[in-house]
Image (cartoon, rainbow, N blue to C red; front, side):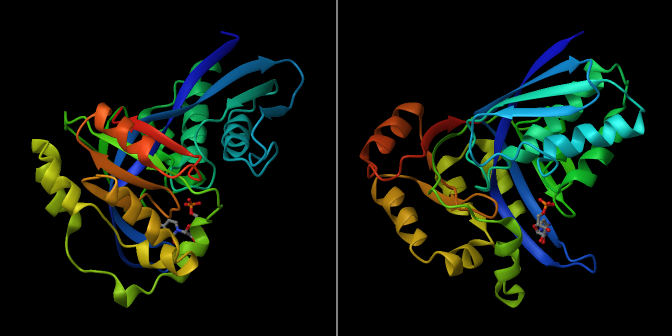
Length: 285
Ligand code: C5P
């Protein structure tokens, strides 16, 4: 095989509970991931010259060693003593540094793609171990699951057997919000001690949209709003426009609304202010 193209989807966090700070500096999480239909496209091509090149038209995507896809490919290349080159072409549709884990998803796609392209026969558990070394959000994308429970740093994944399909309007303000800055602003004594995962899960399983929308929660919200207090207006605007529930995804700044249907999503998006140029109608994938 010479070349391989993969779809690399984004995620939302329907619940994100921060349980505490760990000795390694990371935070212990309990989160429900949802895989959504907004996706990048990654094409991997074997080349003869022994180097990794990244091509991407998006100005915020690094083309060198800072990119997680570069790190993923380099790790595999070294461990398996592969002396051929790789071209990685990224068509970027997922907003960058936005709480949607686009870069992590790209890295997971590269791990799975290289496993095929270079015939490595890596087991799922070895792929998960590589994912954990790259970042907290990478592992989720290795699982073929619409919904999953994430624990640990977020890298311990339990796929959930849930058939519900959700519709959302997703809005990403055009500001870069770094995950480490948001976690750095978190005041742990202010986070709630409720088990938000187990509150939301039965509503998700039953497809009870009204109750699900009321159970969305993200412990990082106060930290996100401490960096950008004005983002509370975006949540309010989505609710005023008819959203059933609204929540930040991950460390923000993306905000998503739960709505009844694709039709409802399209009409809600049409009502939004023109300044929200990065808005999407998405569904569970
Ligand atoms: O794992 P990842 O590289 O995505 O994490 C980026 C940063 O976010 C970490 O360096 C850390 O500051 C913060 N983080 C955290 N706890 C987590 C995940 C991320 O504190 N569970």
